[in-house]
Image 1 (cartoon, rainbow, N blue to C red):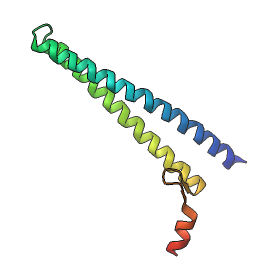
Image 2 (image 1 turned 90 degrees about the horizontal axis):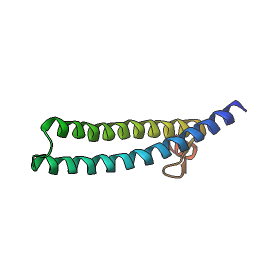
Image 3 (image 1 turned 30 degrees about the vertical axis):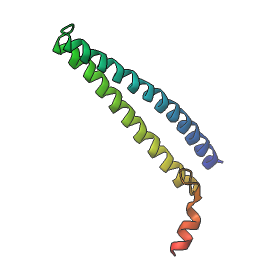
Length: 102
């Protein structure tokens, strides 16, 4: 029963992590657009280099946050594969693969 509970919790965390990744992808798009607008405004002399650097940092942070979330998601997938002996990304049993290598 404890293993089942752990797997259910893990699947819930995976779903939550996937939703977070989707939101962070939107954040990247917004940060890119904002930075592009800031570059144009900087080229026209409407903002200074400090404001441009601030938007560049926001874009960099959006990428970094997404990357960290992606790594967490992949680690959760690996943990699920370890606990269930199933590779959900490639839709195959890891038990059969292990038996074939013996």
